[in-house]
Length: 408
Image (cartoon, rainbow, N blue to C red; front, side, top):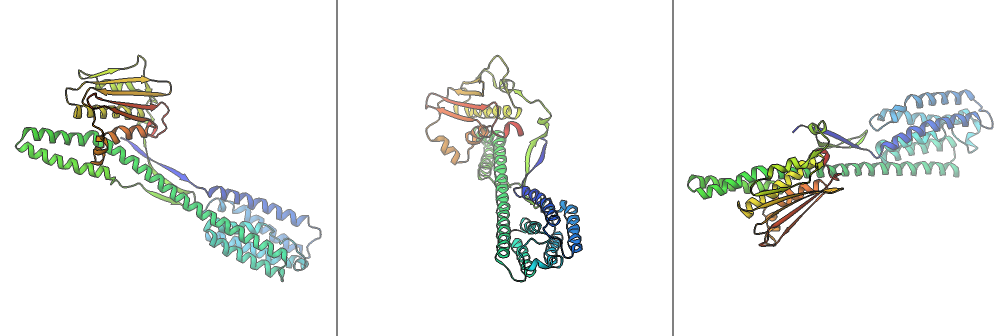
């Protein structure tokens, strides 16, 4: 079956990078307006104009650099922080009274953008490093730190470290969620393989074992070997020794979940399938088939899985109820769901036998029937009374809540 690899990306921090981009532009405009509408002119206006021009060109030219963690390199961060520190230290040169009067520095709150970039890129440790340098520059610029200076420095320091810590937690959560989704996908694939193996290989091995034992001689030895392989294969399937799919992390766009199987052939095929055409093949002298007069439409994947579950139920009838048992298949097309009932007139299932069979690795009901219905978002109910036969009721919603109806 043709399959492709679909990549699902998860990134909690990406909106933070977009917010940082907007923050840098807005704070640049604020710094320019603050300098242009101040109460008194600068003592050396050319210093302020030159710095604001450099800061404006740098901010606008490097907007793509703060689009994500991958583009925000260490070199960019170093230059960006250096520009912010230079603006702080140049403030007394442009305004001689800056050290004696509490007022904004040349870059003003634009400086916080540089510190936040460190926090988003490297977490709280990088944020602490950058904010400490900014604090030192502010203290040097003021000469003697005032209460307002201390307040502003502490605010930037605490805020940047908090944001850096939140980013680290978000990244760890993304990796954990990606891993959980990968394990879930691997489990679903293991169950699908187990169902397919049960419906094909294990059935053949079991038949070879029974016929070999009945024939005797060399055939009995062949049957014994087939029985051993059946037990080994059942153990392998039930233990889940299927390698999990890959988990990777893209530092630019967050955690990545890969290898989500999609049936390419089905995507280009019909969107709905008549379930009756898949179930009619089971009709025969020992199996009666009752169907509605109108088509019973389901998604192709859901129809195939439901038909496979019915086939597994009929296999159980032949194996456990005997070749002479009579079976009936009833299809009901309800407004919101499709109900398929498989009933036989066999001896029924003794109480506790299903749990015992599952413990022995015989997964016909657990995987081939209930597992398939669970994937489709439906249910499988088994009713059996010793001496009165067995009834399996399969219900599938027409809009599947699982993936099997749309991605198999």
